[in-house]
Length: 233
Image 1: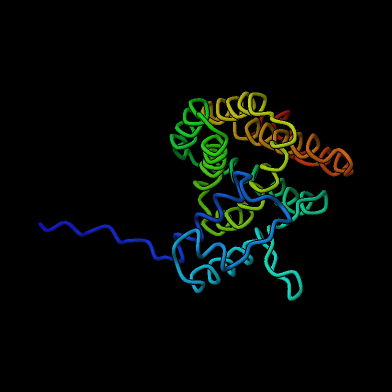
Image 2: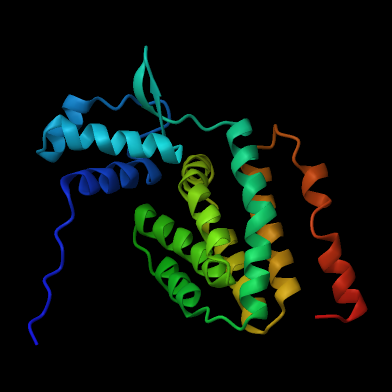
């Protein structure tokens, strides 16, 4: 049988992934201008794939296109964090709960934790962190729910990159990740969901203490707590 050659990524896809990687690892910082001619020269391509890549990134919320300011990396503030993390808090714990209840494999989450522990730089650790969270929600059994969380994943990573640059908290979050995974592997769907909710909420509280998140966060997951007390699945 003749093997099928691996498709070569298009120039636009290459430029898109490289710009995204630079944004999410802090090489391109919030508010920084993204000039088509400069980027085209850096990547050795014409302006067309750069322009298309920037349009796609604008659609995902990582960059902002303005008639007067051109294209810039999206600024991160408390309002943005509230919007992104509100969606995560509503959807991600529920997705994990469903994944655990259906007995989905969490091997990819375990592998991501191992990669994060062995990471040698911020970029590698950041990527492993993103893959850990995705591995928790993706096997939830509802593809639409997974796609909805995928849509905010890059914006959440941008918030994280800014927060980690100001106050690295990798070790604390790694411990929380292990706790979440241990509960999930033990089949405790409600406990894992609560631990994930607490993990996401505590991170954004630390990163944006000026925002009033607490009242909203504390009200989350009362049903899960009540269910546990009643001894129901």
